Amino acid sequence: MAIGQFVKSADFKSEKHVPVIELPADVKAGEPFFVTVSVGKEIAHPNTTEHFINWIALYFKPEGEGPVTQLAKFEFVAHGESTKGANQGPAYTDPFGTAKVKLNAPGTLVAVSYCNIHGLWESSAEVKF
Image (cartoon, rainbow, N blue to C red; front, side, top):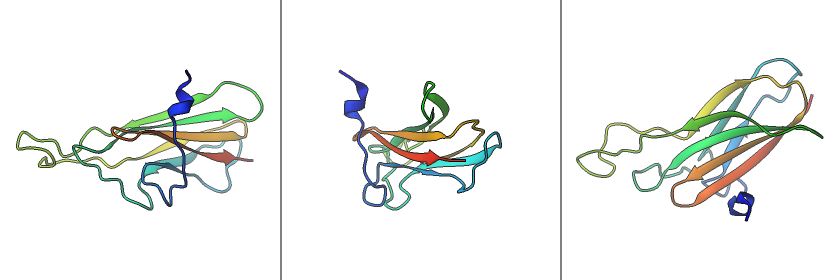
C-alpha cells in the first residue's frame, strides 16, 4: 500500500483543502525567491477546534533526475482551543507560510496539506528558468 493512494487533489478554486503554491513568474537559477503556500485562498477553510489544517509541507523534485527534497514544513497549532471550550480560545493560526528558496535546476514544487478530518491534499507548480 502506497501513501500516494490517500492523497487527494483538485482545483483550489473549487476545493477548500487544496494547498495553493505562489511563486514569481521569473525565477532564475541559483537566485533566492519566495514561495508562499496556503490553504483556503478562494474558499476559506473553517480553522476551528474541530476542523483544521494541521500542516503544509513544500517539496521540490528536480526535472529528470534526483530525489525529492523537502524545502519547508509549516505547522498550525492554534485553533481556538481553550479551557472554556472549543473555539473559545484567544488564538488561531491560519494555514499560510512563506519560504525563501534557491533552486539550481528546473523542476516541480509540490505542496501537501493535512486536514484533521479530510486527510492529505496536494498541488504542484512547475519551475522553469
